[in-house]
Image (cartoon, rainbow, N blue to C red):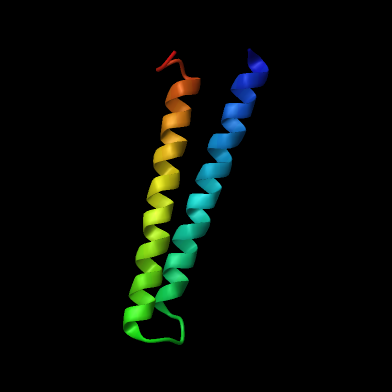
Length: 69
């Protein structure tokens, strides 16, 4: 049981780290040397990806806390 809890915590941390990385990529996309439309498209892509990853991390955290069986 504790091994599965540890694994879920690792997965959640990994997802949170990936989300943070995508937020950083989104910020850097705004300052890239490209057109405004390309920068906005890249920014939106990375922000959407970060939001999906954070939602998955939250879902995994709820499961590991016993929210779902």
